[in-house]
Length: 168
Image (cartoon, rainbow, N blue to C red):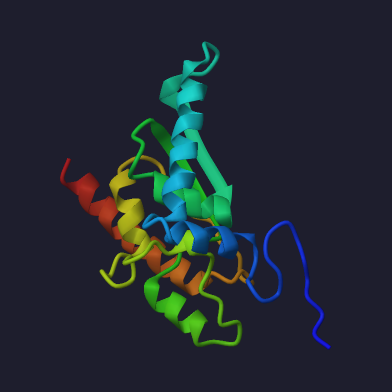
């Protein structure tokens, strides 16, 4: 007899809450990361409306799904001055290796927007528009996002940041 794990969203057959909501949102022709970015931008709008907040000192960090959001939002909101995505940044190659590896995890629907891998868009491509603002990338050795991919992305971004500094 199969025992199902039930939660607020989904069960063992349908996946976790990210999968259920993400798949439903695909049906609208949109992507869940867009909705999440919209919420984050509205949160920054609220922050900068507060008199005690210095708009010139807005920073953002997040781990796992938060690292996903940080990576996706940096090109969309120029008010962010410093950023630190944690436990998300990797490379397409490492995502495919993970898909074929022992965990076979591809991530949640909001982590890989439709067409991103088809068009060869890497996490470095998402982070590069943030340059030359300060960016720190964090990773964990035993996370499902490959730390090898994180190091590869870091090396690419470091090279690009260096080229941008040399041109100024």
